[in-house]
Image 1 (spheres, rainbow over the protein chains, first blue to last red):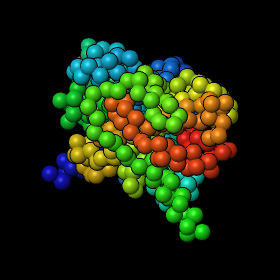
Image 2 (cartoon, chains in turn green, yellow):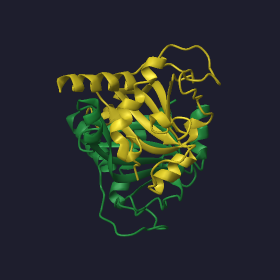
Image 3 (cartoon, one colour):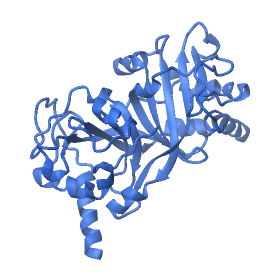
Image 4 (tube, rainbow over the protein chains, first blue to last red):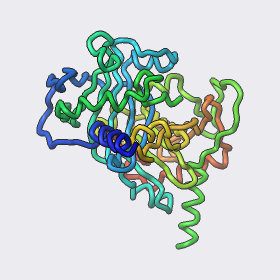
Length: 174
Length: 174
């Protein structure tokens, strides 16, 4: 049991840990290994699915955005997500805001600091049948893939317990 | 000094406290008092400015969205914001995710729970000259104004220390 717990933690950390390599310049068109996913242009303009804070090693605050196919499926509560769905998780360092706290008169405000990374889930049920129809990728803030093949392989096992939600953790925030 | 601190806290709390009245049905077209601001249709589709967590009495996790004028000004780093800018702050209860924590094997994940309220700042430099060009409003999740006049009057004094940022607290998250 302990071994399973440890394995799950290891997988989760490998899959989700902040892994930002210093990058110079933009790397449009470079594909993440294994799944061959490129960062979609305009993803920063996508609609909001929800927000979250991961404490612990991650120590980030995050927004989950979706392309039109993702948003439509979420709002219509239709599962599984259709092919063409892309879900983007943007994470930033979780930092206290001294500026806000000064106004509030107490330490209560935590905001988005420097960007950590961008993770994508893209749906293609035939191409990625072995991983629930999902392909996974991670990019640094400049759009450069920054997870080695071995780490991307750990993404799906981590998402597998969320089978009832088509392997997606995030729920839509109304 | 203590009195000033207390006053600032009182203003901040009045301005930002979760104040969700139970509402039945949607109240499209009903304007918030004083500033007369209605909730803009389609605001939930606006682009993301940033995310934050307010601890303490607020205990929420929030996303700040902007209409096109807001996003353009943020991205071009142009201050003051132009007339027509609207910034929407959506807050949800800050709740631990048992579902995620089970996967991670530890309590680290906090997500958006039930909606708390929606606050708006709208820019019209002539109409609202007395409050830095900004009008303020708060709505419940159904789009019904839910802050009394006296409380809306406390919004600007709370934003006044952020004069250098045109009275807006939130910075753009890249």
